[in-house]
Amino acid sequence: MKERLLGFVFCGILLAYAVNIAVDKIHASLFADSLWFQAHWVVPFVILPAASLLGLAWSFGFFRPKGPRWADAAAIALTALLVYLTLGAGYSCWHYCF
Image (cartoon, rainbow, N blue to C red):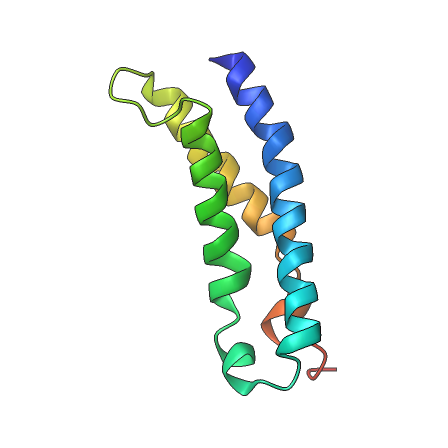
């Protein structure tokens, strides 16, 4: 299970980075002036990466009924950490706060 956890960390960093870049590119090209998108920034920048990381963790074998619970807790903690680290301060107010 430790090998799966290390693989999840590596792939999770790449996935979180890719999702963040993709959402930012979509926002910049399609929704740059959308007030709804600016007010609900939590959806693409928190919920989407968290859901994709939890899906990745499930594909790595975590959250199974007979799996070790310490590994599931570690996967959840790593998911929260990766989402927190990829979420910059500028996302909550975009470029208009400063």
